[in-house]
Structures are given as structure tokens and as C-alpha cells.
Amino acid sequence: MNSGKERLINGIVKENPTFVLMLGMCPTLAVTTSAMNGLGMGLTTTVVLALSNVFIAILRNIIPDKVRIPAFIVIIASFVTMLELLLEGFMPSLYDALGIYIPLIVVNCIILGRAEAYASKNPAIPSFFDGLGMGLGFSFALTCIGAVRELLGAGDVFGFHLMPTADHPWMIGGNEVAFFTPASIFVLAPGAFFVLACLVAIQNKIKMDGEKKGKDMSKIGSGCSDDCLNCGETGCSGRKFYDPEGSDGPVGKASGNSEDKKKISEDKQDGKSESQNENTEAKQGEIEETKETKKEEGKDE
Amino acid sequence: MSDLILIAIGSALVSNVVLSQFLGLCPFLGVSKKVETAAGMGTAVIFVITLSSFVCSVIYKYILTPLDITYLQTIVFILLIAALVQFVEMFLKKYMPPLYESLGVYLPLITTNCAVLGVALTNVQKSYGILESVVNGFATAFGFTISIIILAGIREKMEYNDIPAPFKGMPIVLVTAGLMAIAFCGFSGLL
Image (cartoon, rainbow over all chains, first blue to last red; front, top):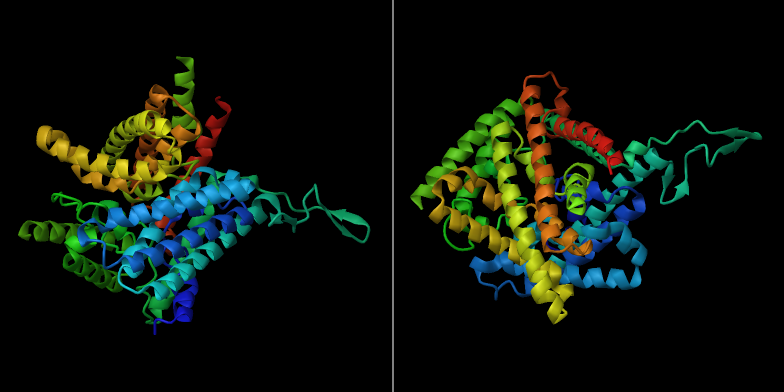
């Protein structure tokens, strides 16, 4: 069941980190000014993800449970540093284009999320394919978003002139045709927000339609649209280093109260299936509920 | 002095940390439902980023550079930030309970904020000194606070608007953020 192929398809299609799980939004928005940058960022992340997954899977029985998040971070940060030096040496143009976002791969929630959710529980080889699949899914998503932004903002894709702009008009029957005016706002910061907004809206639409037909759509994440303070999503669980209840020492959130967490996610799903269409109001109430349960269980402990 | 003012305006408004650099998006979108919580988050971010940019630049200047191990900066910074946040939380709990009451819940969330690491790395990349780093850190965090409070204000007003169903929740917030980003583009002529 855990064959390499199955993990690859899972990462690229079924649980695509960007389109389905909505993880790692900061780099998604920041580096997708062109398809090439998106692809470069995606592949860099893929390498880090696959290697760190393998390493964490090998060390999973050695790392003590209580300090596992800091340990994962050190492993991930080491790979990121190695890759940063390699890129600086061998691909300086990509290194310049991605800039500060290369070291920031360390805090990408996809990597820590996969380490926590998969690699810390499975052997090395499936973990490798899991990382590879997730990474390729991420690369695919970034390339698509980058291509859309580049096409609308500059009329190019991967630097090829696809649209008839004033600089590169089409020649039709001896006439110059240049009806396309690039909307450079799509390459600038605001465009990233608009493109992502449309993406999430399309995803919401798919989810709603699916739920109307009675399919199970609970896997599709809603992004970090909820209150981080009361968030029960497991996707970015690893990113909380310490128990928010303020217990002593670095207790990973997931280990400290995994039961509590399961309960919350169950609550959440119940809430979701009851009211898909007025989800804003419903979520508000549901969040308050989860907050209360969290507090109570914290006290019990 | 004028250098410092330029750095401050540059990182607070012109290249705003969320709206033009896309750092710290999660809390920006996640904790901006109410102006009150947004302000709390903003204060905590200012506190942590200023402190961490000071600590990181001190460590970089007096430990990493003399030992010639500056390539370890990413690892060292991320661990420093995690430890610092934990330490600040313990310190506040023990000695300043009222401040802990108001900021406490936000502190664990901040470790997850890529803006903190981003600022520490920018300081190194632009080879700022210690004073410049602190000013840059404070200004960046201030810019974050301004934008999260504005967004929270707009979201409170938007609560009862009629929004097409697929755009409810996150997408409309992103559109709002995009419009804010256009507004902040106007600052780019400032420097």
C-alpha cells in the first residue's frame, strides 16, 4: 500500500500541498512572479523535503519525542543551508532571483508538516517518495501560478512570448497585431493576492459542489482562514514549537494533547458537514467551542 | 541619523513586510478577525522582532563572524528565535503577569512567523550594524502591526456584507489584502 508510486501520486494529485491542503502560502505568493522562479523554488523545496524526510525517517527511533520538533528543524535547516550554498555556487541567477526565500524554506510548513505527519512514523524509502511527491506537487502548483501571473503580467511563459504585446506583435497577413496589453499588476505584489484569492474561491466552489453531491470533501483544506489562536488543523501542527497552554519545556503540540486534537478535528468536521454554506457564522461558534474544550482539557491535565 | 530614518520608513511602509514581501502571512490572515486581537498580535510581534533582531545581530557579529562560521546563520537564527520566544514567555509569566495576560497567547504563535527569521536574515544580507538592525526590526514589525490592524478593521466592517458563496472566508480577505497592497504600492515613490 505504501508503495513509492502510491506516495508520489498522493503528493502530486490527491494531497497536493498547495491546491488541496493550502500549506506554505508565503513562498507561493512571493516567488511566483514568473514560471521559472516558481519552478526553481519548487524544485529546491522538493530536494529539501525528500532529503529531510529520509533523514528524519532514519532517525525517528533515536530522537526523543519531547525534543523532536527542534531536532527536525535542525535537520531541515542543515539541508537548506547546504542547498543554499550549492545554488549560490552553481546557479547564481536563480539564487539572486529567490534571494531571502531560500533560507526561509526552513519555516515552510509543508516540510515540517510532512516530517511530523509522515516521516516520523514511516521507514525511509516510503518517506523519500512521500517527500518527492509532495515536493513535485508543490513545484507543479508554483509553476502553474507563476505561469498564470507571467502570462497576464508580461505576456510570456517561461520567457517565451505567447501573447501579442506591443513589443512582440503577431504578424497576421502582413499586419502587426498587438491587442494584448500586459497588466503588470499581476507581476507585482497585489497580483499575487488576487491570483491566490481566485484559486481559493475555485477550490471552495469545487468543495461545495462535491458536498452537494454527497462526496467526502473533508480532505480539502480551507487554508489558514480561521483564527490561528483557536486553530485545530493538523496540517501545520509542527509549526507550533511549544504547548500553547504554557506547560514547561518544549512540548510539541501534537504529542502533548493528541487526543484533545483528534477531538477538536472531529468537532470541526461535524460542524463543517452540518453547515457548508453559512460557514462563516458556523465557524465562529465552532471556534468558540473548540477553545472551551481546549481550555477544559488543559485544566484536566 | 537620517540613514536610520530612511531604513525605518523603507521597511515599515515602502517594502511592507506582509504586503510586499509576503512574510508572516499566516498570522496576518489568521489573527485579523477583530481589531483587538490584531492589535495584541501586533504588539507581541513588535516586541519579539525587535528583541530577536538585536540578539541575532549581536550573535552574528561577536560569535559567528569571528569564528568564521557565518554559513550556519540559518540554523543558529531559527534556534535562537525559538529559544528567545520561549524565554520571553517564561520571563513575562514570572515577572510581568499583566503583560503576560495580554500578550501570552500570541507568543507561541510568533515562533511560527516567518517574518521573524526573515528580518534577522535581511539584517545580515544588508550588512546592518546592531543599531540599524534594531531599527529595521522595529520598523518592520511596526509595518506589520499597521497592516494587520487596518485589515482587521476592514474585516469587521465586511462581516455582514453580501459576498458570493465561494468567496466567503479566505478569498475575500485575500482580495482585501490585494487592494491594500495596491495602496501600499503608492509609498514606493517615497524614497
